[in-house]
Amino acid sequence: MAEHYPPEYLEFVRLFNEGKYAESHRVLHDIWSENRSNYFYKALIQMAGAHQHWQEQSYYWAADLFRGAAQLLSAYAPRHGGLDINELVRTLQTCADVADAQRNDRQGAYKLPPVKLTV
Image 1: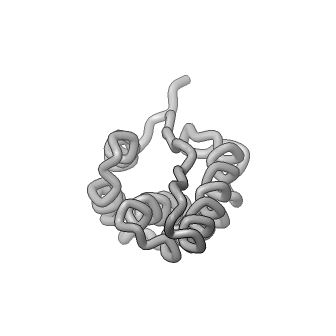
Image 2 (image 1 turned 60 degrees about the vertical axis):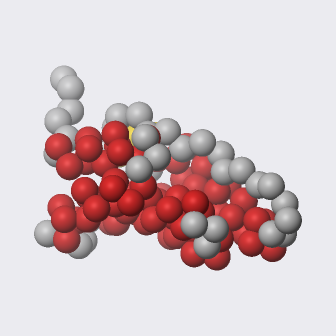
Image 3 (image 1 turned 30 degrees about the vertical axis):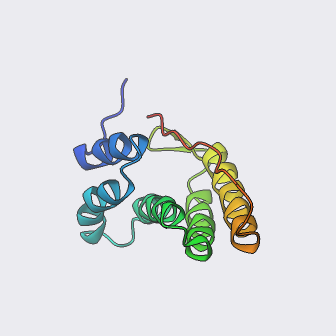
């Protein structure tokens, strides 16, 4: 039986995968605001924010948000919302390490590992 997800969540996934991090953040923020104890949505919002900070070269905040998202998501392992949480957490931890490395070596050319959400 196929799982049904809120349309806001599916729109978040679509926008995030298109690299529209600010837009993905906004679409999920309203539904999260109705239930702030939903740490899964909070983690996804932080993940989108981390990617946005990375794009803006705000590496300290990117690393902080990547780690925060990974920590929140780990409570949902191994799978939640159709996502492989264990893999996502590992990737976000690597993203945090890369953001720290870039912050400490501004002349370096570091790249984040790809994060593609598949529901």
